Length: 492
Image (tube, rainbow, N blue to C red):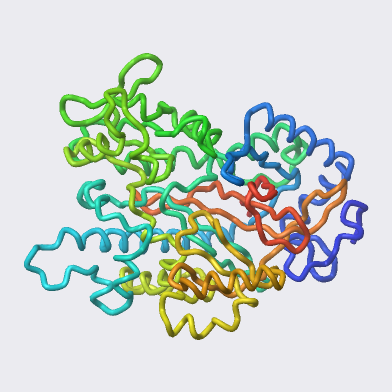
């Protein structure tokens, strides 16, 4: 390979930038001369500048360790990740398809509670059709019967969704997980472009490639949130972002999105009831009516926060939705559709609700609550990835091949004691991208988080988030476990 920056770069089996012959491919070939001019020292200086800029802006995430909340930086690698537009168009169609099917399932799952009392079978239609076991809905840890009242009739319950994808060796995209509850990361993707443009302006100058601007996502998101406005809304829907405040793990993102949308950022203590049954929020010392709340903290936390009149915020929001004066984005209770067990049935949902074949692949998954599936894999746990059904956000995931003998024995005992709490999946070997490591470039595994809105038409937002594993061979990309991020370039 010509150029000193990539000399000695290991040839990885599925690297997105360097082929097996050691040549730069696609958009990376166009970007290569700029990277070579910067060299290792220039990229190292850019990395230091990025770290300082992000620390000054408070760009971090928080996670819980040993019962304590800890702040973690979210480092930004100076070398962009390039996703060809032709691939983006295909994966976007697949993400939109999943979003449509999962919203249809949510409508079906929560419609069951509203059937007539005389109905002999109150199960969802997909259960009645024999494609999904009833326990997968009724006993899902994410199913909340009270959430029926938190959506107005016909409202897509997941206004905003995201899917985590990886690119496999053949160049196809596979979905690892869906998130229909409180998808996080969009603001970080938008901030990554700001940071990269400021620290490495050379990447954007001259006649080089011009990537899609992730800030183009803001008007699309705004339109998607406005579509969640309730039937009694008159005039343009008024929006606000609802946050738990500075203690939230993605507080930085809440502030950025509120600013990008041009709407108030409020806490539960700043929401008041209106005389017509709706709500208003205190912003800049003035109470302003709101038609849609973009909810940015977990379902379980809604009852833990009080409004200024001492009412739990979930009670106030429920009353406003029932009065037809408020739309929530997203509606609580969506965990029934995005937990690790529901993932296994998404291809069936696509066929049942849409009459289509899945456009994106899924990872082979065994739901261990099914005795036959548990028996099929109980002797293979050392080869598989184990996920708790209730492990939202990837919490509790165990990679069998990475376990020591003692760790594996503990995991096997835990799963055997309560197999219904777990699913098992085949490990996925996914692509690597060039990443700055100690002044040189090394391949690191990366995933891609893609966001979409349900209405007025299902649409993917042009601001995907790339997360990069911290160590060679690692496939763990979480920021709280040392992962970094990259500016993602959608490039034709």
